[in-house]
Length: 134
Image 1 (cartoon, rainbow, N blue to C red):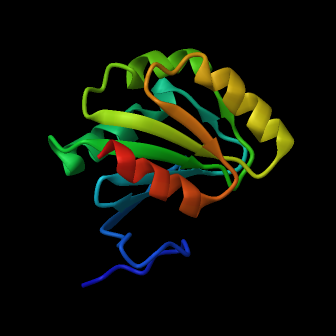
Image 2: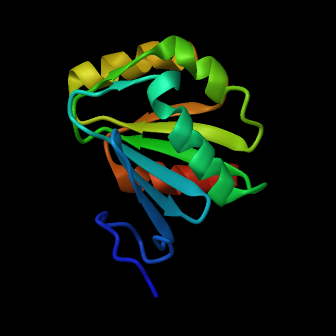
């Protein structure tokens, strides 16, 4: 049964699975993972580790790209990118921002991420970009 996507993406991006967690929603479009944090949370290794494990378990050995769709305001501990840097199947990180502050924050985060890192103003652009890493 096809899941209904909350995102207006091209037809070739089919939603396969969702995870509703205490810190946000995770959407799996084959090997593209879209994360939308809840308003006001603090995203860190401590708060995100269980989600990362569930996601890696679901994805298995496939290459994947993480897209942070920042529809809400929340905090990130940029030093914790060191844990994502160690995930061999993670190929790239995209960040979709909807504000200048979000864009500035993502520029700082990019300094801590050793994977290809790109910022976007639109989720569709981000998922199309991500296909180049899969």
